[in-house]
Image (cartoon, rainbow, N blue to C red):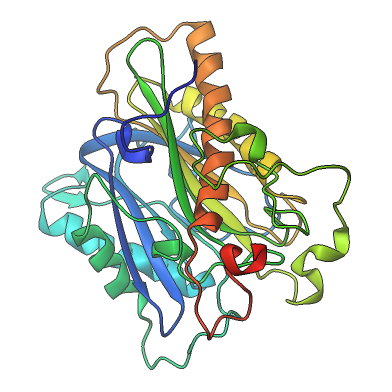
Length: 331
């Protein structure tokens, strides 16, 4: 029987820490995934409009093997500045890629578009370096879900988006977890508010008992009619404490995208920048044979789907929102 980790969060993976920072006047935020020591990571993009920093270094053929943090940020291209705040904190701790006597923090970053969500975007200077710093300083092994961090200003087709997380324990003692910021053109629910990811729910983690029934999907329910193209994206991280190479992590990230397709309809559109990072803390030194790795890939996709639904389920309602939170939409 499939079981979640103790917290049902990505931080059930040994060594993983998460930090959030957000500004609800701007309606934006930053989330970071890190650890107390370097970790191996890779990524896969399946959306047509990604915004990234330092992700090329995560390709298996590239030189850097270990990094110190991953950043998910709102703010579109402005949000890439969040990595500077995280990098400053890492440098102050002496962490980073060694180049002679210097350490250069490598902080791969992905962003989503939340500039048209009703928040006050008339800042004099970019808020994202400070948000990145605050998110790093807030790192811990427990964290809230919903309208927090990179999900603070997220929108879906008919409802608010949000940031969610989920985990699954493996038979060999390892763990796979995910954290996703869902801000897609598509919908995570049908027109009755029932989650497309309902078949994968564990322990009533996003309400329980709300299966979609029949073919109720309608393409007009996306936010194509509400927002201009290139204003979207679902980004996230999957993590395991089993030892995986960069090549294996690339495959894990690719398989994990199935979770986006299961939880959001439609997904991976030309206007979405859908991206998933995959990391290994290698804290559990158990063998990873072919079957174990295949199981890990499958469970990663389930954790992604569940994380998306949990983020939207926990989104907070606010009178200034341009789309309702799931709880109000469902009502």
